[in-house]
Image (cartoon, rainbow, N blue to C red):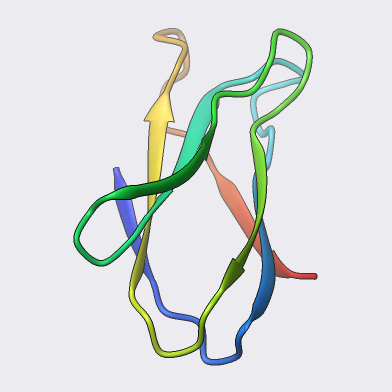
Amino acid sequence: MYYAFMPNISGNYKIYDEKLYGAGTDIAISILDGSLNEIVSDNGGTDSSASITKYLSAGRMYFIQITLKNDTVSGGGCIGVTKV
């Protein structure tokens, strides 16, 4: 799944797995530019959740790609986005 994201303020943004399905890593996260070229990604580890902190420019279109890593997860994953 892809989410379109266009920040109105430039700065560092943290995009992370909300871990709604327990302590394991349910999703991988990638940030792509407006042409769908990957900028950065985090697959998470065996005991940590995916989390990316990246400088994003105001007025530019980004896509956040969510990939389910566990086929036992139903309903998808959930991400949080915070300006840091």
